[in-house]
Length: 152
Image (cartoon, rainbow, N blue to C red; front, side, top):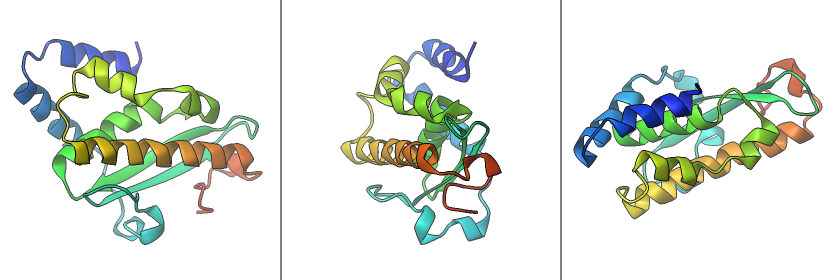
């Protein structure tokens, strides 16, 4: 079972939106902390009402590197959405990332219809950033170095 399958199974046993909302917040609390220096303008995701920072790192085969992500937000529910995005995409190859529809997963979790327009737009901005990093990893000759897409 994948992390997403586990997550969907968890959400299937939660009966109402309030329980799901609390679970999203708990997922955000479990997100590993992001170093203070990583809260920089170049790591900030544009298009989010809350502050969101995402860092990616590529490793493995340069033709289709595996990406891992770290991130943070100043809002608990958004941090939970970051955690969900990472469950969907982190540890996947760049091509798998580009082929995966996060909106479909949100729908299966029963979250798509319950997020405010601002949060939905913010989540879409996070996914766009993750996919942008995946495209950049496919073009970066140094993808196997284990450095972040941004050269760190």
